[in-house]
Image (tube, rainbow, N blue to C red):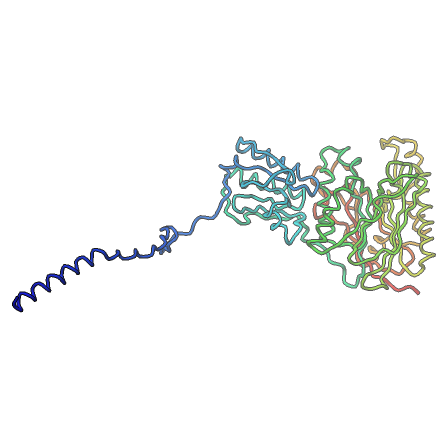
Length: 493
């Protein structure tokens, strides 16, 4: 075979082998799959932000109302919100207590509930006598200090949200406060502020006058007084079982949020062999003072057995930061029905004061109370008054003279009189002539029925200011306005 033919045959074999080889080669491994990113997650230029969550009245039927278990009285606020919603929209939505219900997506929260949103709203403030409306992620919160501000907030909610069918973006669309803006700091040069407060108990309050706010509502007002005026020691009259139950929440809340600590001293006492409610208890700044001694004396005029009213209670205080700052307070609520009962209070309290002065001769003794004795008028005609004991009224001697007798026996000075002579009496007054007028929302006339007093016995204290608190909702607090006096303390001889 010639050379040319051999070359042709070799080329054919090579070509055939290459083709066979290519047919048996494995196909290439497929490329590794890449994750597909949804188009919605890809960045888009000039994207419009999603709208903020809103509260829409049109969807209110999806909501429930959840109220906090404390403070006392918030269930009535929740009921009012429910009634206003039904009146405005025709829809009835459930009212639930926070501790009795599981959390749901759409809730109207009333007060400091156990929901996280509520807890965040109350993190830094008790909100006493203040209210806000806040919304967040489908929840609406009525941020309130108690039933009083709750009623105000319910009205705001009805007016500006329900009636206007306003859509609320997340945030704080509404805020208001009834806390007094004219609160008075301790007078320059003064060491202590002493207050006397008849808060009006349930029996003589709403049980007699049905238009009056209940104790649970009035208690928030009183907490606002403490928060704004910060008295060191308070003689409290007529704080009955309802007050005893409602007050602790506010005292605890102020201590936790505003760092102002008050302790309720002697709310219960032993009387006639059983524990009863003391209508003449004490409040004091336990962050500032220690109680060295306390006591109770029931007067012969204390004819009640279910509670103690015609009594004298006392406590001796020493400053935590300054042990030289010492004082004693005696709190009372005198009888008024007859000479016999009045004189029981006069003589027995004077004896108690003089006993304390003898034991602590260099310490001022402050007497606070509802003395049922008018300081301006020197006579009264009781024959026109209707009473269960009309003969007692007819026979009663001028109570102002009895009061002056006590002041003389105790070696005391009437703080308002001393303040007037020094030109530091701001306002005088303290008792409205009729508790029925409380519901009129009018300020009581001053200088009428001024029967609440502060008396300092034994010297060693100088009054620098005396005032009657009329702001801070006090016109609907009680038939008495709180009174206070600022004193400078002097060292005894």
